[in-house]
Image 1 (cartoon, rainbow, N blue to C red):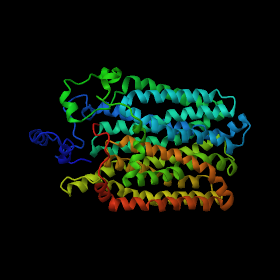
Image 2: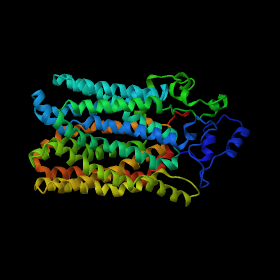
Image 3: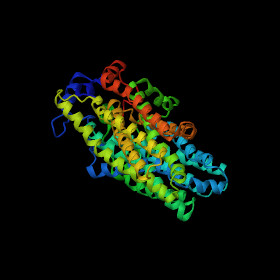
Image 4: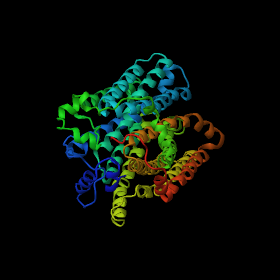
Length: 498
C-alpha cells in the first residue's frame, strides 16, 4: 500500500520539479482521501474504466473462478455411478477428483507468469479452452486411465481460470473498494463446489455420469464466448516513464483484439518469473495467510465434497440427487450469509480506522473479522461430526455445514483482500499460492476415511475443527505484528511497472 509520498519514492530518479508536480496532482476519493493506487489520465487505464465495464469484467472472472471448483466437484455425487462404470471402488474413483484438484493447484505456477508478460486476456481464454477439452475427454473416457488424464487436462485449465481473477480485480479497483469486490469474487470461488454437487447429483442420476462432464463443458464454452467480446485486457503499466511516452489510449476493440498493443513495453518472459510466487513466501503476510487458508479450505469446503456421497448414502440411503441437495444448499446459504458479514464490513473497518489515523490505511485491520470466523468454522465442524456419529436427523448435520462455511467465506474475503492490500503489484503471485493451497486440499482424501474408521466421525471432525482453531493463532500474530514485519522486510523487487 503506497501513501502519496511513496508514489514519488517509487520513481527515485525523477527531478525535484517532476516529483513536486506528482504531489500536486494526487487524485482523491469522494471522502477526500488519496486514491490507492493512483490512476493515470488515460481512459484505457482499467482504474478509469466506467463502472459498468468494471462490473462486467468482475462478474466474468468471478464466474470463471466459480467454474474451477465447480468443474472439480460436479461429478462427486455420481462417484458411485463412476465406480460401477469403471469397476473401481469409490475410494479409488475419488482420485479422479483429487487429480483435477492438485493439477489445478500446480498449473497456476505456469499461468500467472504468462499473464504478467502476455496479458490477462489471452491466457484466460487459453485456460478456458483447456478446461473445455478436459471435460470432453472425461465425458468420452472408456478407461479409468483415460479419465484420470482428461481430469488432469481439465485441472490445468481451471487452475488458470481460478487464479487470474484476482489479477483482473486488482488492475481495476482501488484499495478502498477491494473488500467488497474481493468478497464477490471469493463467494463465487467458494460456491463453485457447492453448486457443482447440487447440479451434478441430479444430472448423474437422470442422464448418467457422462453428463456431469458434458454440462460444465457447455457452460465453460458459453463463458468463453462472452469473454471473447466482453473481457478487455486489464494489464496496464502505471510507471511514469511508460505513461510519459504514451500518445493516446486504446479503443475498446484494441483492448480486445490488439494483442501486441496490449503488451507492456520491454517486458519479456524469463525463467525467474516462474519462481516469483515462491519468493513471496519470504513475507509472513503472505505465508501465514496461505497456510491458514489452505487448511480452512481443506476441512470446510473439500472434506464435505469428498465425504458427503459416502456418508449420506450409507447413513441415510440417499441417492446422488438428494446428496447433491444436502451438500449444496447449506454451503451456499452459509456462503451468502458469510459474505454479507465480510466484504463491505471489512472495507468499513479499514476506512473508519483510517479516519482516526490521518488517512493511513493499515491492511491488518481487515483481519479483525477472521477472529469471528475462527470460532464459526470449528463449531460447525464439531456439530456435523457429532450429529453424523449419533445418526441424528439428516438435516441437523447440515446446519453444522452451513455454520462452518459461513466462517470460511469471511476468512476467504479477509485474507484475499489483506494480501492484495499488502503487496498490490504481486497480487497474482499471492493468488497462485492461495490456489496452490486449494490444490493441496487433495490430501484430505487419503486420511479422512481411515481416521473415521479409527476414531469415528465425532472425534475426526472435532480434531479437524480444533486444527483450524489452532492455525488461526498465526493470523492473530499478523494482526499484532504484521505492520512491523512488512516494514522490516520491505517490498518485493519485481513488477514495479504494473
